[in-house]
Image (cartoon, rainbow, N blue to C red; front, side):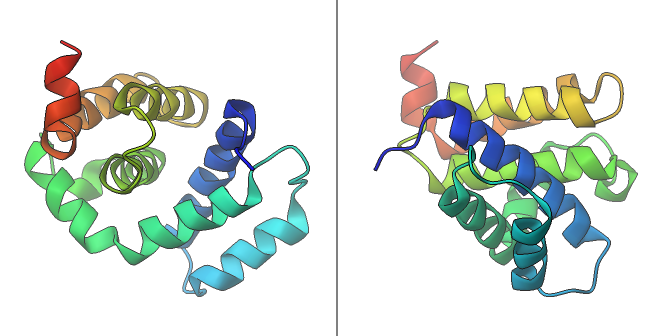
Amino acid sequence: MKSSPAARHRARRFALQALYQLRFSEAPVRQIIDEFFEDNDFKRADAAYFVELVEGAARNRTALWEAIEPLLDRDSEAIDAIEQATLLLGAFELASKPEIPYRVVLSEAVDLAAEFGAEGGHKYVNSILDRLAKQYRSVETSQSR
């Protein structure tokens, strides 16, 4: 069954929150996922996509940050934790979800950063992910410009 854009958006919102929590927790990824299912209503969210995002971003964190860090204008530790989680989530989708247009990935990440992050953080997230999209999705980005 194909999930709706709204259900995927809700999955991304929960995934961002889970990745944020994971950054400050020693708990295993699966425990955090299970806690999210206990504490949140997933009726209107794509639960399978949520799990895929959190597990995939967590599992590939090192490789994703290796791609992100050269694009940063400051040390990664100086970046707000929400923006870090948003960049990680967006990078995972760009790298692992070619069926999702890169513009959708960027738009969703910018929306999440605007909703949860520091003032103006969404602009920073947009600029980093836009440049990352050119690496991960070179054919797609060159066709749409």
